[in-house]
Image 1: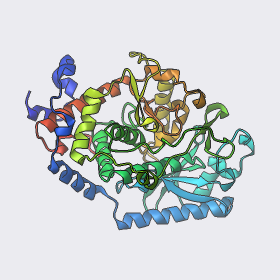
Image 2: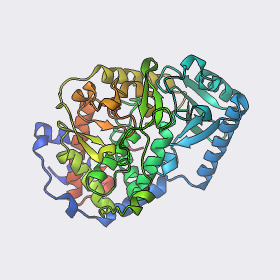
Image 3: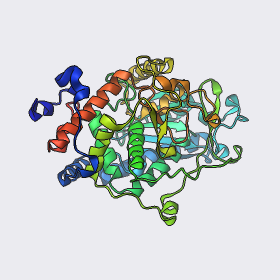
Image 4: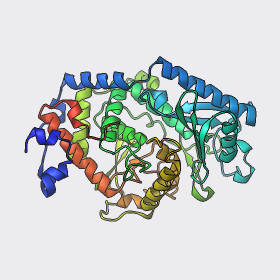
Length: 434
């Protein structure tokens, strides 16, 4: 088969059929280098990056939402953004993820906090009504999720927004990922391209709005950080999280299904502290890293025996081997809930790929005590396990079907083939371009 046939963006399994697993890469990742890839990716970023006008519009929206919340529920509350717009891997069309911070519950939902005694600001229906009164449109309160949110639209700035109350782990994750981005300069560019590639193959649709549920941007980012830790490019910023903490005064408590409370150790070191200790990462060009990432998931990663976990330095062994051919009840329920939410929002707002990371925590966090050090039973039937850095019993790839995981591996193989053939980086993209 010719490069031209592969460039036609047909899935690899459609070209090679059952023989796809016999196709092997021959070029060691450390030998790959193509400066033209880096130039092409920078051009893509420049074409889609938010300009000053968009950044100003975002600030206006944040200010207006903050005013609505403070005037309705009290001056003590603070509205803040988190997610990709805050660590610099967003595009001009990215939605805004916002949180209402409650200074009186800075440690989250401690078991002593009674859900039926929470202030009105935790009632997403009431928050939605306040936003409607404040001039926002397409307001949808999703109250049945583990992390209730309000989705709405700002007609003045034409921005879509997701707002939750006091799910502060999103803010902690944002700071952690920002430190990793600062540790290796090309990381933001790599995240941008991998997300673009995934969108082009319908692999970045966690809510399942346009097809089978696939990977959230957050999950893809963790997969990138894990790979770079394994290669020695990035440090483990959570290696300091050893020893016991007072759960009443440190960490963060999350509220899960049936009002179950789970505590997370939120300790990590800033990049400055790690550098002061003398850490130096392996030097790697962006093109080498992108090629290496595709090659890793195409041929090197042992899905049957390992999971990805950035808290453990990128890689951790499965306590029980993978059992293929069976999907868990949680996976099936997650996909059903994704479809329901997508149908609810269809025509009234845009479902962003990161939404499922907020909406579907109920299906991703297993009912296992994190302190026990036991991996959840559901992980045995998940081909890919990507562990959340703080909710360590959460598999961020839980809602992804085995079929989607198989297609993902096949398209990684295709990407390796094209890069080794010297093809331009945009030839890796599928037809479903964002």
